[in-house]
Image (cartoon, rainbow, N blue to C red):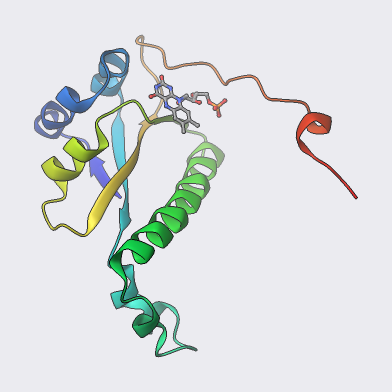
Length: 143
Ligand SMILES: Cc1cc2nc3c(=O)[nH]c(=O)nc-3n(C[C@H](O)[C@H](O)[C@H](O)COP(=O)(O)O)c2cc1C
């Protein structure tokens, strides 16, 4: 997660946003760039210590990247819920050039930008209201 707070950092981000996302992102107290670490396997000896060889199962970069995106997307969900539980607004945005943001902010070649999130109390450039939800009976099946 890369946190952009300064005006200079915002200036670097704004050209990659869809036009409808620019004003609110420029005005947000904080913008999080949420990224997957494709080389997460290097940290597995610390993070998955009961399987010290787990790192060696993940030598294929393409498969690893897919796993990294899946895991990072779950983490983004936790973050979204956590930010809101802390009493702040969180506005996730997929409307941006992810490849461009990856090049601009992650020249290390191991991180891929997945989603942006405006965080904090919205100003006059209001963020969207919470969106409608489908009814439980439309999306949950019990056998
Ligand atoms: C994956 C995802 C991508 C989104 N992308 C954008 C976006 O690019 N621009 C935007 O204005 N809203 C976008 N939204 C909607 C809002 O950020 C957010 O859904 C809104 O604040 C309502 O919150 P809620 O979905 O929890 O009801 C996106 C929502 C999701 C889940």
